[in-house]
Length: 311
Ligand SMILES: Cc1cc2nc3c(=O)[nH]c(=O)nc-3n(C[C@H](O)[C@H](O)[C@H](O)COP(=O)(O)OP(=O)(O)OC[C@H]3O[C@@H](n4cnc5c(N)ncnc54)[C@H](O)[C@@H]3O)c2cc1C
Image (cartoon, rainbow, N blue to C red):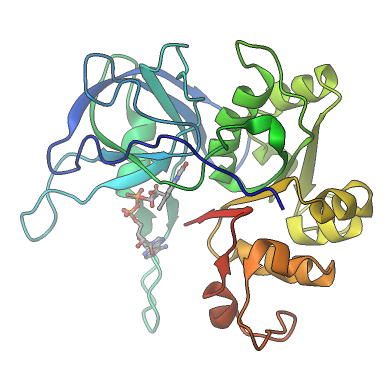
């Protein structure tokens, strides 16, 4: 079995209590079409701050929204996955970016019939920022959701739902658009979204898949206008070629990022394919993931070749 090594990792170079000032250099919509959601690619220049050159693809950074809580304290930091490669959106490690989804909903509380508009504080603040605006940032955070230091020793299955695509933008760039040339590893990106119009960076990923035979871009739509609903785990189980082969190989690293709870279906499919012990630390007495409840499955820890970031 080939376990990944991650090399030097810097973390918490800038603490949320003493954030640095970044400047927005890009804010562009990144959905494929008109959609009920709003997702923007937001890029922030941190040059001249200790954050510059410290982050790696797959890590997160913090955003401190302005204002105070009801208790008169600064708002707590919110984390956002870095969607830039390690060399940044600018090629020099000075510009980090993320894929930010506005949190807009109706207020909900058990036992209450309040149905006012609920607007997430930080995601909307970040999406509202214009090019040139300042923003308080911290980071980087995360020590495992990273590409290995010897990327060609491995093949990759990246599974995302929604803005879970963010770290994979940077990782895919790093694997296929590396200044030393594209890596030869087999790379599968599976992205699940409700509607086709919710796909993010879709043109870029599609063009990349046309250009590189070793990159495979799989889109899974859970509420299609026609046809059957499909979720990422069902798609992987049903698409036996190539997934059963790739997940059965000891070169493969599995990365899961997106909506909290998505790992449950993926863990179950790993057991269905007979490879759960390759990717998960299961109790010695065994665990039937098909029948175990969600709370039990959420306590299962990923093993060395499985990286999970859900929120
Ligand atoms: C490691 C990590 C990486 C992340 N990466 C990304 C990313 O790449 N892109 C991205 O967009 N987000 C990402 N997030 C999520 C992000 O950190 C924020 O949680 C998100 O943007 C919402 O923050 P907010 O300030 O907008 O919402 P808040 O104002 O903090 O509101 C969210 C809170 O309100 C509650 N809430 C939500 N809806 C309702 C409702 N209808 N009624 C009542 N209460 C409600 C929630 O339970 C939650 O506690 C990531 C989180 C983590 C931990």
